[in-house]
Length: 136
Picture 1 (cartoon, helix red, strand yellow):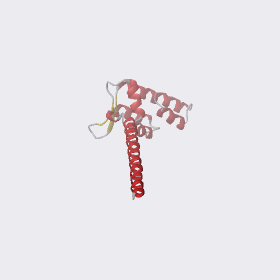
Picture 2 (spheres, rainbow, N blue to C red):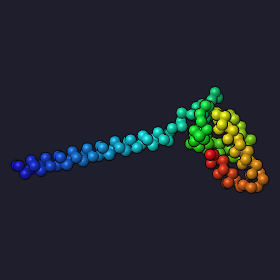
Picture 3 (spheres, helix red, strand yellow):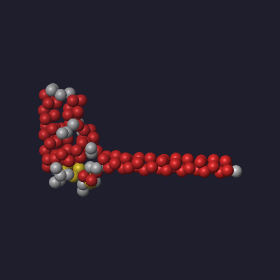
């Protein structure tokens, strides 16, 4: 009887140890997932909807570095790149869907630069898209 009781207690302690370690690991994973989620969605506060229901990126009164990082992580950037090679629509997109004078100026200057190089033959379509996607 003493052997079976000892064996039962030993299995119980092992089970308790396993459960506490497993729960501790799960809690650490949740912490990392929350940090990853926060990093991925840190610029979502700048996205809003304009009066006709289109998504815009509103970064008025934010520093230029934050504006550029928010642009590079936004869904509007992919929508903007789909407009290529219609440079006049790209400029219209910038004026209508992006708020923030510094970012608008940077994007417009980049579009003008790429447009002139693209039409002069210095850039092909792939290089132009890559240049437009890498705003610094």
